[in-house]
Every structure is written in C-alpha cells, then in structure tokens.
Image (cartoon, rainbow, N blue to C red):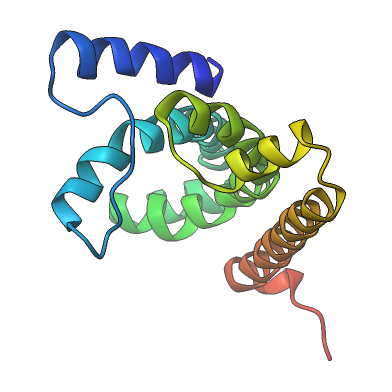
Length: 174
C-alpha cells in the first residue's frame, strides 16, 4: 500500500471518525513531547508500515531458509535452546537480506515523505523540496538533492558496516 494512501486511511479512521489523534499539523518536541508524539504518530505509521512489511516478509523468508540448514539442525540436535538457536544462529545469518532491503528503502521513504508531508501538513524536507520545484528555485533543489544523496550514501555505508558486524566472513583486512 502506498504511504500516502495509508496516510489518508489513517486520517479518516483515527482523526476524523475516532478523533483520537490530530489530522494534521506539527508541534516541536521541545514545546511539548506528548503533543509532538500525538502529531507524529500517524505520519510515522504511514511512512513506516510499508517498509516494515517489506522487511518482515524478507526476514521471514530468509529465516525459514536459514532454519533448514545443517548447522541449525546440528544446534537443535545437541540440545540448543530455541531462543539461542533461532536468535544467535538463525536470525544473525538471515538478517543480511533484510538489512539490504532497509538500506534501499530509505530513498523510497524520502519520496513517500513528500506526499505524506502534504497530507499531514508537516513542513519537512519533502515540503521544502516540492515548493522549490514549483518555484523553480534551482539552488534549493540542488541542496535538497545533495542532502538526500548524502543520506543514501550514509545508509549504504551503515549497511556495509552492519554486514561486517553480523558476519565476520564479510570483514576485509585493512
């Protein structure tokens, strides 16, 4: 489900019908942490739900495959406890594809944030970029693209570092 469509559904259900959360706007964390949490809940769910679903689907498929390998069967056979076998051996090896998906989803997250910011009335980088595009403000567009490119590069670096931490075989000698 696209994040903007999920955002609209969340506004209709939780803001309009149930009146539990505000439909749009933003309050700074420094002004009121509880109000900030109320205002940021719906946009965070709208942006994060699709990514969480993709990661969980990938992680489950990789974990099912990993739990069918010989070293996991050996760990079960020697009496390994379920949390240790699944968590330490299975999940550690199965998490690599999910980490890759997470790193790649960051670019999509920023793209979805442009529409979600419009729906929820939040003036973030997506709102700033969209207003710069409509006004043909080239330096601002270049600055936003530069910031987003640096963010993507840093996420790729974080994915590589996480690989090295999870799997010692991936580490490269300096």
